[in-house]
Length: 254
Length: 250
Image (tube, rainbow over all chains, first blue to last red; front, side, top):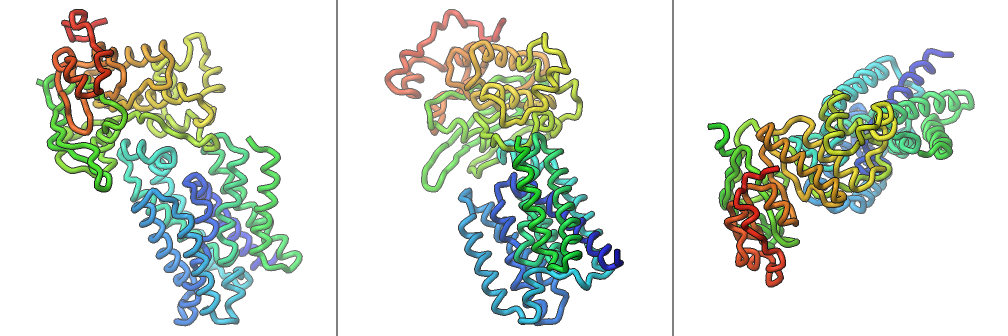
């Protein structure tokens, strides 16, 4: 096994762990659609970063940050499901992104590229993934309570708005990190599909979040191995692997 | 003078939804150890008042809680998604990691018979999804959850709606026990005037504004009830002689 493949596998597993874990809360917060399409917003950010010759990660993270701020604002302002707005807005960002992304980089931005991944990239991914798990541990109680009932959470002294904001911030982070593996088209799927599979087989929250992370990690690992063996783009194979896990999970639905 | 300490003072409380005034000019106070019942017809703003007291919705006027109070809340109902992968045990663990304490509090709200073994309980109830419980079971769970960390104040929004008659008695007796033994202050919304007479030492009649406030036997006269519920209120008229002592005996 080549060194670069090992680096790719580590990145895939880390991204899968983080995306699966956050995705499990996305589904509970009834934000599957948001989770699924939020990554599209990253494309115009990547394009702008490329035009100004800065690291695309920052462009993507910036654009995602704007998007989650928008979602957070909608959540606060209204009880109305923001799905329609989110659907429209995210699809439009994709259209703008495709127009302004320089042609040579477009494919990479859309579907990810971990062929040239470096040790530094892996380290940054590892550190930021750990930071994510640390912050989630801090807001876990409030996050869980606000999923059960916002009222109950507020009555127990949870700052629901702040918890929600931190959570969305982490989402932006994980999606921005994951773009290198799956690209803007498919990163959202890696947030939602492993968690959806985990939900099928879990009765309690511990098993649910744990299996969501595990399924995400497995998707990354198996997907990248298969892609490397057959010389495919890893992104689509990783997402397809999570799809296969989802179908298997249906057989064990609780 | 801790028994007469004022724990909540409300001045000119008002709530508006858009242009619609849902609550207007509420003025009342609650002392430590009080059991305050809030009665009123549907849509009179009872639950809204609770939400304002909990600072969940915007309001005008002043709500002053004594500093450092632990306040718990049991909502009227909670719609738990059947698919939510959260076990009863995990729900309690948000507040207490002590399994024995959890089982004790579940016992006290009458959710498990004494002859159930702990092993049986943990397998069948604690490990179930919260969303799989029946309405009555869930309501008891919510009450148990509210009291597990010994709050100073409890806000109960029709705590026994959906619970059978025997269960209702269990819950109210538990409330009384907490009130007596721990000097817990209780605010409860009820539709049942018998409950008000039996358990509360103060009552607010609410219909967007305050129609009455005081000791039930003194303020719940036929004219107040007519004001509150309209013409049919005579139906609720109560035999005062049975309750001349409002110290909530038995």
